[in-house]
Length: 111
Image (tube, rainbow, N blue to C red):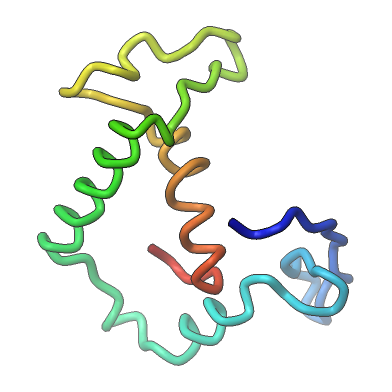
């Protein structure tokens, strides 16, 4: 796992848009940004096999207890269907505990 870091926001760019948070002067998503710029959008795709692999990864991590049943921020209640194998954890928990950490370690590109 990556060590915790302190982020600071970069100054807005000349076009007035937001920039990503920086760690010192290094963007943690630099590799992902460069890949997104280099690969044309028409080549971005998800195959059925990609989806099946992702689902298997999520199911495996869920079975190992690596996706906790976080309380809903609005209600404070846990997801009552979190452990139902037909439904499982919600996308917010999957994003927080699977997608975000994996993609950040890989350089910040999309899954």
